[in-house]
Image 1 (spheres, rainbow, N blue to C red):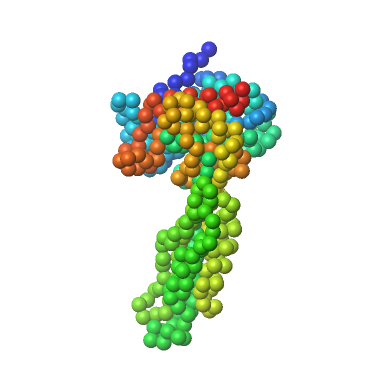
Image 2 (cartoon, rainbow, N blue to C red):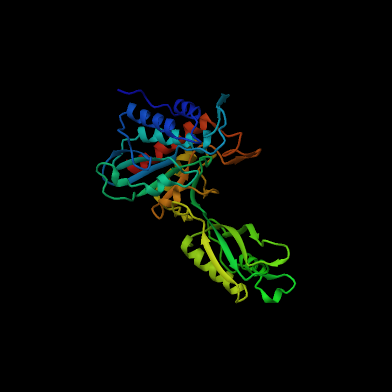
Length: 369
């Protein structure tokens, strides 16, 4: 019989593994841990680590990632705090999810799906196929819990993140006779106005608030005495439901076309990437996964956590919606002193990892009991 799983001991070992450039060693630790506890893991062609328990429905999926951002931050541990890259994003959440997965005997199916590339292109989540698991016929589960640092609050929504470039095309001419050309840089004035007013009149999302559209890079012109024939503006979009990446692209191109002179050509091209953009998602607060997890987090923290709120960063959760999806885990993105996740002071409190594991186990017992 295997020893009981210790989430803090697992986390302690995990944070000492560098996984900002290559996740192989971290995935080996995860697979070996699952093997040691009789969970029979498999690694699919996209590098996802999968394991499942039970059968039938309801089917709940626990998801997080094993990659971390650069640069590596060395491991340290003192006074109940583990420091180092990945401590809270997302090896602390992974430790809590693992504890709940291994500690639950489901009346239904419980699946662990851990991805390798969340911090860059989410290639693992984009390719995730639950039917690769034995006995699973449906590619979509009944609920998803995504491990990220939320301070043990239950996050039911997040904005999407799109990016693309507006290309304005005109005609070169001598700057001494500007009327003979079509000035693409001058046309940027209308394009920027269209960006500023793009969301005018839209009602804010009840949970996420208003979307944002921010110009981030402008390039144009080749010579100081020439009417420029080309100008590009890169924009960052933080979307709210029900907007999609495709719908945003078409609508923005029309808005810029309407705001620029007829001789100027307008084209909007989403930034190329191998996987779909992370869309906005929102889960109803009345969903059982929300109610049970919020109640459990409230109980294990004596009321200090368990609030239902949005998550402020993009996550792979958007790939799993519209199935009921929440984001939950130990650690915080930032504290009173500044950034924590993705910062050189990244840390997580070991007691919070243990409380997260307890809350997840309690919620899963209610969902799958």
